[in-house]
Amino acid sequence: MAVRIDGKVISGIIKDEVKAEVSVLKAEGTDVTLAVIQVGEDPASTVYVGNKKKACAYTGIISRACNLPEEVSQAELLSLIEELNADVSVNGILVQLPLPKHISESKVIETISPKKDVDGFHIQSAGALLTGEPGFLPCTPAGIIELIKRTGIDITGRECVVVGRSNIVGKPMAVLLLRENGTVTVCHSKTRDLRSITKRADILVAAIGKPKFIDASYVKEGAVVIDVGIHRGENKKLCGDVDFESVEPLAYAITPVPGGVGPMTIAMLMKNCLEAAKMQKG
Ligand code: GUN
Image (tube, rainbow, N blue to C red; front, side, top):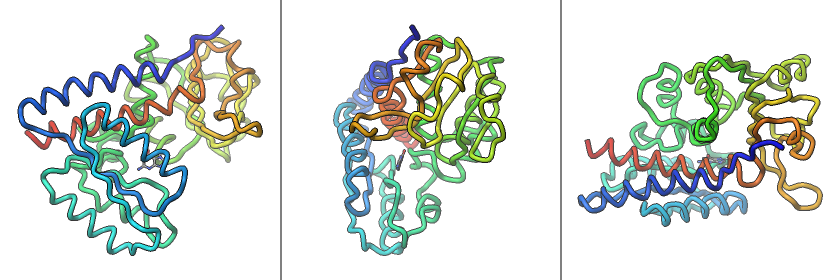
């Protein structure tokens, strides 16, 4: 039986660490504030934003909700971001994605001040990640590193395979694993003979976007398997990119869905907000 990497427990520990530091800052007269912008009323986004606001309330971070209608113009959204950039009482700015089609996500992300880019999506944050300069790390891959380390797994010298190459997960994940001295391979939809590569992995990160895609035939015995996917299955049950029942018996450790990577993303967002406030305080 594999070790179950419990993202709920580990994210709870991180949120408690953040909460303790936020309360010290508060006692010194400094509040930590996150502005959360949601455009439109996409139900999934509303759930994600709600969970982020709940985590803020738990950690003592003030969340400032900015809800804009679906039809808002790009110019109006950019001017709101510029206002928040200039507002010294706001430490972090988060724009929930996806955005309506008439708005350029990249333009929006590049308008957020890198000092307040708590999602770690700005091109400056991406550059800092690549070169090892200080900057905000994207929350999901940073959370995965925490899950691996806090389970007592050393990444140094291990064969790490990331399946997926998105800007939000796959690419930054590969860079973070490299920073931890892993030997990293990135696979994607055009990769030939995917199985032969994933079968080499000591640490396998699945960020493919296809329900239960990774079954036992893709996994080496004793591997650490991290599942970034989240899907609603036929029976309405949540599942990931990994076929948990098939993979669990041969893995050394595995993240469940739900309760694995998901809660870590939000915990790391809280950590980034705290870091933003500390940095801005000087
Ligand atoms: N949409 C899906 N995941 C994320 C995320 O991590 N941050 C933001 N801002 N939007 C998202």
